Length: 446
Image (cartoon, rainbow, N blue to C red; front, side, top):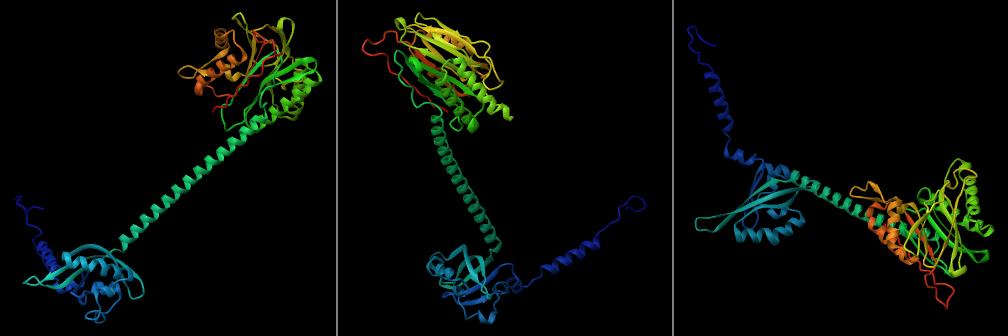
């Protein structure tokens, strides 16, 4: 606001004066009032600890009367039992030596039996000639700090307990996983032969790779004698994983064994399996199926040759490594998955194994292994044929060993179970024995 003519009007002179007077009145506390009403506790004691002076703040905290304290109690009498012990063994001796202590945590006893956590600082007052006269003590209420510390401690204990529980849960989970892996390994071994029998006039080798120790695989194989000096063998892959796949694997294996003993013709055995699976699963509204290749071999023929007849239901073709260094597939076109439809057609093929020839059966985990920098490509049948050509001729043991190394080289690109079974006619049969022993190999990798 301005006067006429633009000269400013002085303002606030009276307000400033009254404000200054109010502040002056507030600050005119007596020293005694400042001592008695301080936001902390004050007391002075003689050198023996007898309380000579104490302010109202500390008396109010402890619920004591001045008359009952001054000249009647010592500072140690205000402390808890633990505080008294600390005062006698540490506080008082250190104070006499150093003349000053700061921020010592103690607990005072209140009238109603409560405890007051405090921080205590003390200083010895000396006379003109350096003699100790009295002890001045300042006491700060540490209740909030103690509550905060307790909360921190509680949370730390909770965190440590949670970490211990997590560690125990992890150890338990690892132990459970190990037990599960052991149980699954035992069950998995029950689904395939422990070893292959020795076949007169033939060499055999086998490999089984499990993609995960935590799941039951669905690949299966077997080799067993049937009537007429012949041997039946099969290899296949059921749909799915886990207990249901294991159940299907067990049913498939024992159905094929029973069917082969009744009629060892490969196509007949697979037709029987197809009927059983279709009736058991598809007819009940829960279709389950498998791929399978079933073979019948008659070793010990003319010049050591062995006739092999194969039937396939939707399975990858068998691979033959010839003694002359060639490798060839034995296609079985037209064969459908086993168990999908009644009366499914079965593809068949026949070949002769000369000395040095080896036939290899495999599941699609081999050809469908993912390769390349991005794991975007499949290994495929062409690559498998080239691999076999590079290794032909080879005995069953040699070719299974080579294929096992190939599987290991796929790393995490091999994400499916893979079974390998090889049978071959020895290139130079021993004149003292009708045949060479079986050379089984096994692989269980995760």
